[in-house]
Amino acid sequence: MEAAENYFRAAGCHAMDLRIISPRTPLPAFYAHLGYEQTGTAPFAPDVPVKVPCHYILMSKTLRDS
Image (tube, one colour):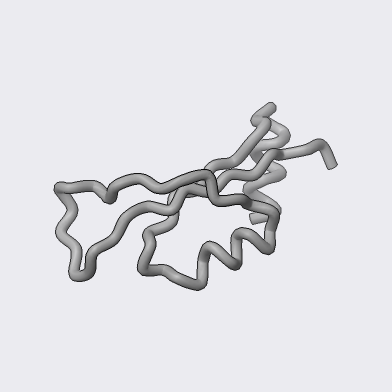
């Protein structure tokens, strides 16, 4: 994640946004530990077959110069 954040920071980006699939329950806490905050949810793509009900968890982090 650090390399990805540095890449986008160097490209002039001010924030990074993530979409996490809700059944991946450990991931929101993992990304929160890295400074990401949950900004909302979104429906999962209706044309993709799924085995369990799911939605996207949206997270974002402001990229500051380091």
